[in-house]
Image (cartoon, rainbow, N blue to C red):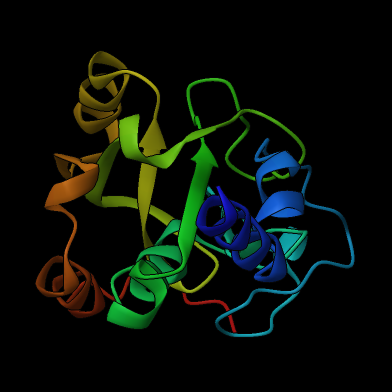
Length: 169
């Protein structure tokens, strides 16, 4: 019994208790929010955005594009602390300003890699709640449909090769 109590005390000492009660619901991306990767003001740019909740942090990290989000996510140190990740469902969100809502869990979304629509830093990953929606998007915009776990650093590197004609900076 004494050992059990000591264990409970140790857990509480690590800040476990309040952590569990935190909401991991997506939050709106607001006008002043800056990208965790590049520091740009997120709402000034088109295309799907993302956000990630990490351990020991109340508010999510926010990203100006799904591309920046994945570059960050695929770093080993990020993967170790991530608790929840959200991206825009571009079926419902307008490409030019998706910022406020339509955020869905990134792990269950489908992504179009290499389509012709640009995000904040050029080529990006168009994100959709349903595979069918992603496939319909490719009919108009090109690209390849991929699942969350397929998007790795080589895929993101290949996106860099696709620098489009118009580049925001």
